[in-house]
Length: 392
Image (cartoon, rainbow, N blue to C red; front, side, top):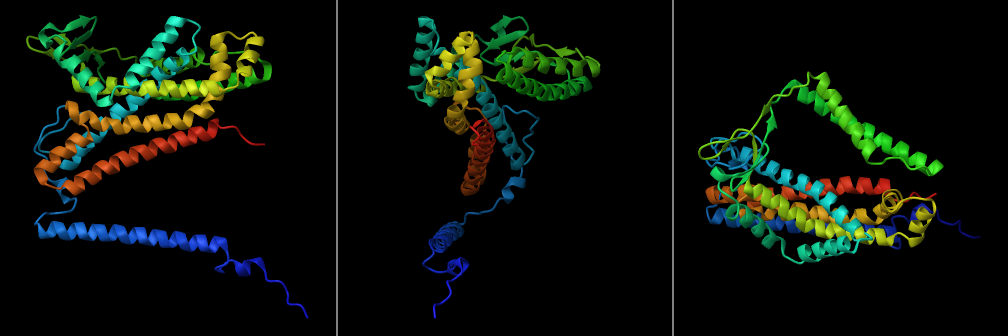
């Protein structure tokens, strides 16, 4: 009498099951790592107690007692270390976000310029890439800071171009006096983003169905600006502006960007844009040449072929490596401490000198950069999933 065959699920928890063995190994690995982390944490806490060193994050509620030279919002030395860290985080994010935007624009232009039919343009783009990517970023930051701090005129003799002033004190520019109409304008711009994206999708579907190209840049830009202007008008069209004026010893009123911020932003942008340009060039070269020939056969100009045919296909190759460059730019912003820009690393160093909480302060720095890097990765992975080729 033959024995009935065993149900497949009966072997699921058998050691002969490859899936079961893999699960056991993974559980053991996690357990070992967890025990190692607990051992290191316990050993660190024990050594700190033996040396009389305090631990914990309670110091964040204490009075900072130091001033911060640059902040997006008002900071008083009598406020807490936590508030000081928030200033450092916002300063870091300001450089990272603006740097990513400017790097994307500049790097894309240079990468596309490598395919120009003009030999001078091709040569200049190649020279830019080879020069900026082969000089260490720290040296470039120091170079830009030296340029702003040594070779520009004093604030009393600042260069004036219209309502703008440039000097050793940085860049001074006019800013609008805040009113409710500006909130309406911001809302209109947000609405304009959605309208511009909808137009681009409609234009792309029309091009795919009929072969008739439509504006993929100027029309969406016009829609975006029109929505912002409409919101500004609905909000009362406020026009009051705070202009900078030349004082006896300094430039007064208006907004300003410090030399440290400008040096950091320009240095990181110029350096990272060289790598982004190579990523863009490699992505375009990965598109079969037949695609460009087909676009030319359809009567598309070189610019239309690049915008409508080559770049959209190259995005599938460009997005993953360009994400790494965004992450590198964000992490390289920690070099701001070398030129005196008060980012989160600079604030943490000051906190360590005053409180002695080195472990906690370094942990906070790691948490900030880990959070920003993961957020960037999640956003770019989402965009990559939208741009990838969908399998049928």
